[in-house]
Length: 389
Image (cartoon, rainbow, N blue to C red):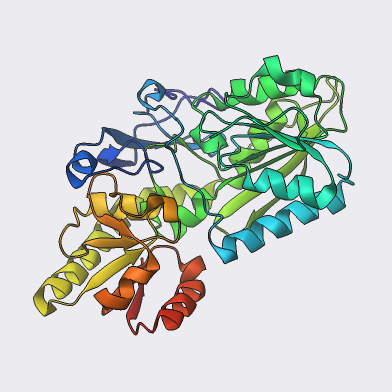
């Protein structure tokens, strides 16, 4: 259980949950072979709690024993040109800022290895990717090698110059232990750079991106909570900023000297606390607006699809029990085509499907990709209204 009555990051006592979402699908990166299998997918509850001391938000109902990441897990964003550009710019910035050329890079939770390959190709670096969902382990003579395992202190012998961990930390139910082990493994190599990025909870709360709240994410970081846990675990924060149109937070850090004093001042969380206090009410208002939209679709008989078979679509469709009103979900990842969305069981199709289906409405699940989607629809000769979720 992540946290219970105490914050898993700073250990402070916390109040009860401010938001509850029952029966959410456990996995957003697993697609199902049939509609019935998708409807019967395992589910769990989400009870969000705000730590008033450090600003971390976490799911106190989370049970890590229920999750299993394996080879069929696929939540890659690298089929999107917009996302590939962001990843490439991030890799090049890290290489230039920290002179990462001819160095050793470790990526924790590397997925299919796309970002690690960018770092190694652009900087002539050698990379080691750790992830239990790796499809294959690399040859020892290759520039990039994959280890089908979780990263642990046992792998500290790789002595990396850069450790990166992208869209993974929010899945870790014991974040302080995770970072403390990472710091211990680095030891006295204080020039090692550590780069993490995580979803930005302020944007989720402020813009009511409730569909970004999923069971896999047991932690939701603000800038304050992210900085606090890095400093508490023996890192010096070099840069911390919003990125990808504010949707993510990225932190660049290096090990602090073990004798260096650690900051303890309390962060200003007034705006975060206010957003939390009104979140449940604003979610109910959002739900009512979506119910009106869905009624309009049913009344007019308009053909509608959603674009993006990822976390937001799974969150939205299951929270609102969307079924026949939007029967298909489009995704540009060909590995997902012909499978079914967890819980709500929409069939996942490729963009070419729309040439014949001719939807009148396309629900864009992430506004960052709106222009990219509009361009693809134009190339397909499909004229449709776009709604941003």
